[in-house]
Length: 244
Image 1: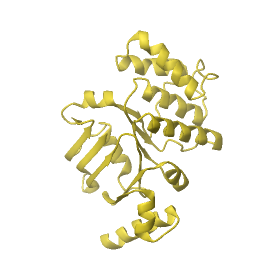
Image 2 (image 1 turned 90 degrees about the vertical axis):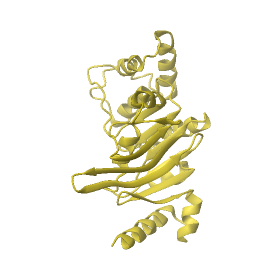
Image 3 (image 1 turned 45 degrees about the vertical axis):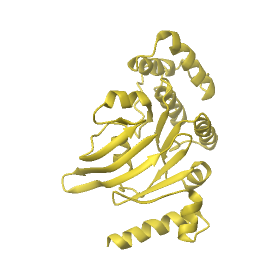
Image 4 (image 1 turned 30 degrees about the horizontal axis):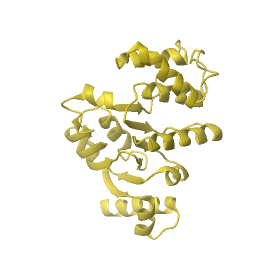
């Protein structure tokens, strides 16, 4: 489980995150939504220890990210907004490198790597250098790299951004598989169809604050809208009106 408790983060006079609290539970897919500049990416970066909060607490499986950041990283698999592959390495070499950074025993490395390559349908690109990969191939490699140490908690920042239809469908199925395995899956997306199809719970952030934390159905009922996109727009609009 991933838990954010009263997170604050400012950059100079700009409050990017202003008291964000929510839980992403095991065996569920939690969507993190919000307009551009709402504080989503900053929140995610605090959750996976890339940034330290000015105030507040991040807990991953009960471990405090400020006190034990390395222990938290071992519990997390992260697909960040910047994929950051090593272009001169093959897909397999990228995965192996991160496995060794996590201290994965060589006896397990090959087995886990090949299982991920099969699951993500990467057999045709496994031994190719990642320079020149398509967006979908880069995302698959980055996901395999993030999951090589078998984390129980997975954070995906805009995982289907730039993917074609078939790659998007495959990735959605993979996320559902992670949920079925009892993992905690937290992802951000701008695609409402994706959110509606995948999420057990939706956290909406606007102006650095959580303005909704409900199931998709509860959000529809709360706003009186049948369409999730319309419900999202109404929630954001209501929040902007309050902020004004």
